Picture 1 (cartoon, protein in one colour):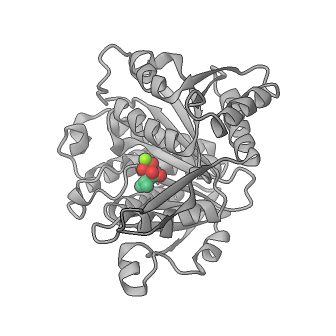
Picture 2 (tube, rainbow, N blue to C red):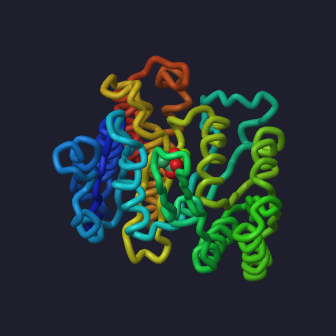
Picture 3 (cartoon, rainbow, N blue to C red):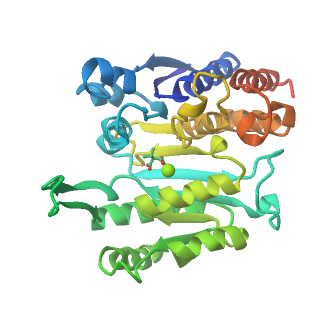
Amino acid sequence: MKTYRIATVPGDGIGKEVVPAGRRVLEVLAGSESSFTFEFENFDWGGDYFRQHGEMMPESGLNALRGKDAILFGSAGDPHIPDHITLWGLRLKICQGLDQYANVRPTRILPGIDGPLKRCKDKDLNWVIVRENTEGEYSGVGGRVHQGHPIEVATDLSLMTRVGVERIQRFAFRLAQSRPRKLLTVITKSNAQRHAMVMWDEIASQISKEFPDVTWDRELVDAATARMVNRPASLDTIVATNLHADILSDLAAALAGSLGIAPTANINPERLYPSMFEPIHGSAFDIMGKGLANPVGTFWSVVMLLEHLGETDAAERVMKAVEHVTANPSLHTRDLGGMATTAQVTEAVCARIAATADGYI
Ligand code: IPM
Ligand code: MG
């Protein structure tokens, strides 16, 4: 029997509620599987850790994660600590430190969920956004001088490297090739950003030659927002820079019904380091500690974690259980207009997983 070593990092806010829910789903799953099991280690990093130790995670933290097969992450953010400190001290530190350069964000309208696009059939919206996750607008290069003086200057440099752009676009073309429609849209802004984004476009053309069976086009990021709303079925796999994809993926999540459902995977495709799986909703302090958080984004992230481990049958079982539960409006949390609690949704998904154990359904 295989044992997968999983690190759990709940982080802050509702991360502390949804990560234990995700772990519970994995435990229930393992209870009905004979070929694998999980060994969990929890890391209490985040805002509370910062208050005690002056840093979001310890210096040795990355080493502790390196030996794991995957990481399940909650969120980073604290109302009393500036956002750029919580983000750079934890989530980006892990993503960049473990070279998780491909951020993958699937979006679909799950059964029972009412999306805001009235003219769109549910099946028209089935996208995967691939976000460059280590450089671009989030390179961290920049500075601020003469603070508070009239001559103050601040810069955030968007930095793109040929290696970084080639590897994310190759990843996106490969992902597009693996999906039935073999369709990729490369998001750009090379009309205004005339250096790095022009290189981005050139590299897309060059990489496309390696994938003659993938149909691809280019779309300006502003036009892409309108296209997502007006012609959702014209998109399938989408690749974009760090910031562009950050923005488009929130729009995608909203169009699929709720940010509470959306999952993400921070992948190191070469598997030199563990990959990290997390809901995209963030820490949501307004509802923390109330048991109202939607755990579906975490469960879908767990599905991506299982797929990454190669446990595709188990992944499908969890996804089917999640869809079975979303199909029932009495099991919708508040973000979906329902009354259900985190615990009720979690128990319903776990019960379904147990019920679909080999041979039952
Ligand atoms: C995301 C989030 C983060 C980001 C925030 C929390 C800084 O919005 O994962 O999309 O912008 O990367
Ligand atoms: Mg975002």
